[in-house]
Length: 229
Image (cartoon, rainbow, N blue to C red; front, side, top):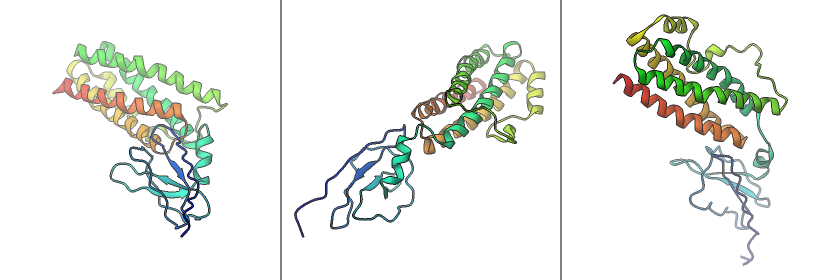
């Protein structure tokens, strides 16, 4: 066996949860191992690798094994500014946020607990500007907010018009109970949407935003549960 080794090229592609290491396959046929500590998106099934071409080791998440894929498979994802799932996420999250604002606005003169009113105001203060950011993201790319023939009510956590009417009609402790239940479900839906994007999105800005949504809304869920404890 020759002592020469194939050149090793390491390329780290960072997109929130995506980091891959590009390595050359040694003439003996075995890929080198990825450096410890790399964070990656969920690994997919390994594709056949041509030993004469660079291979890509995609480390799995904790508890998952790494996958080996051709380097060309990830090159386009690294250079793409966004993908279709980024666009879909923004278009879905805008109306999702809008309903959260609608519910939060009802708390001002209906909530019985001052702490709940303060939480609702926090939701308004954060999600209002976030809608503006997402609209700006679409406009900067010449994309519309519309999704033809899509029922936004089918999204995770979205409340029915009847549920919103019941919330609007409630006052005091009854409002607080309904608000916590409905907003908790709503936040859980947003957290799941954000988590899904972190697995497949390409745009770094949106990945950071999705991470923020998942983190902040999880904290707010815990606070709402404490209010009724």
